[in-house]
Structures are given as structure tokens and as C-alpha cells.
Amino acid sequence: MPLDLDSAAERESPRADGHLDVFRAIPPEYRAAVLEQCIRRVVPKRRAVWTQGENAEYVAFLVSGAAMSLYQAPNGRIGTTGFWCAGDILGAGDIGLRTTRLMTVRCLDTCVIYTLSYSRFQHLLRRFPELADTVIRALSLRLRWVSQLAVMLETQSGVERICAALLALADRFGRSEAQGTLIDLRLTNEDLAAISGLSRQFVNATLSQLRKDGYLQMRKRAMIVDRKALTDAMGVDGMLG
Image 1 (cartoon, helix red, strand yellow):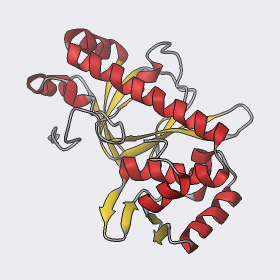
Image 2 (cartoon, helix red, strand yellow; image 1 turned 60 degrees about the vertical axis):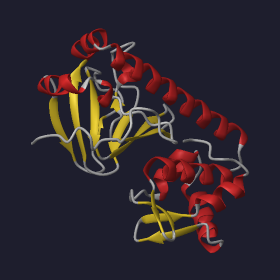
Image 3 (tube, helix red, strand yellow; image 1 turned 180 degrees about the vertical axis):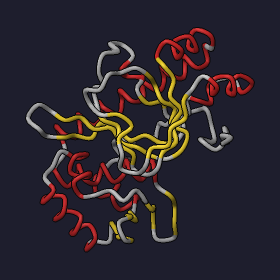
Image 4 (cartoon, one colour; image 1 turned 90 degrees about the vertical axis):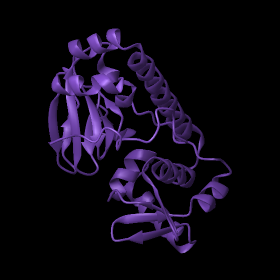
């Protein structure tokens, strides 16, 4: 099945949410040759690309779909560490040690990925400086995201954490509509609890209040958020983009 290389993202520079299309950093004339070295996988919605503790043997280019990464602490608590969309590279954070996966990556909808062994990936980095530069910038943006997440968990109230999480989802996956920004990911309240570091009961109550206040609408299991209202309520321009 041919891959539409231009559909993964529209630009090679960062979007407003900090996203970089790593795959497009490979010179166009060489992308087909790179794909020939990859293994194509289709991962169904809510299935894991890999799980925490598995052997780390390859990176993956996410060419369509959306995913989230999660870490399970020894005490059993689970926290969300990132969101991923078309053009992102998965598994680059495991290159340093290449032992086991630090986090689980789970698909929020059906994902198409192309996997490449670490040895071949490192060969590509040496061959194409443009790709190496984009990977460094992508990892820098990811580090910034994680740092902002840590700051949010330490300094913001529970309600502010949930608002920040909704703004992050809207920035990364949202689609503008007349009523607001549609987040069509079918996230559960447990997912939002993991993102914001709160209990599911607290998330339930807060979402109910946000709906009453007109900041949030539900469409089946999708959400429509009023970004301006959420931003004004927090007094920030969004935390986790």
C-alpha cells in the first residue's frame, strides 16, 4: 500500500503545539529507499505498539493515527507522559540505553507505523544530517513537554491540571468547529486522570462542572472544548502544547 508522504504533516518547522514531522526531514528522494528498510505495521485502536519492560530494538515512524505514552510506577500508579501524532518518531528516547522500553505506547485510534532497527536508524542519522538535526529538536521539544508536565503537577490545582490537559489535547489533536475545538479521541476519564495525576472521581466531578459552565461539550465520547474560556480560566496560554 503506497504511503502518502505529504499527508503526515504540512510543514517541517514546528507547529504551534511544538510538533515536528521527523520523517519529512529525510530528503524526499531518499524516503522510498528508507521505507524499503522498514517494516509496516497497522496497530488497532487501544492496542499497544509496545509495553513497558519489553526489549527496545527499534524506532517507529508514526505515519497516521494518534497515540499516547504511559509509565507505570512500582506502586502501580500510571501517568501519561506524552501524546503522539502523524510524523512523530516513537522510541527515540530509548536509544541511549537500548535495553528495555521505559514506557508503554498505546494507540488512541488505528495507527500505521513503520519500524526501523536502531542500527539502521543510526546509519540514517549519520547519512542525513537534516534528519539528525530534526530528531534532536524533536527530543528537545519532548523534554520541554515533560518538564512542563512536572511543573503543572507540582504547582497547579486539580481543576487547573484538567484544563491544561484539555488544552494540550486540543493543541495536538483538535479540529476547529463552529461550537469550539473537537477532540475526537474517545478518551476515558481514567485516561484524563492519568494525564493530570488525579483520581477518576475528581476528574468526573470537574468535567461535569466544566460542562455546566459551558467550557466543555460531549459528543458521544468525543469532546468539544472552548479553548479561550479554558485559557482565560487558567490565566495562561496553554501549558502542555
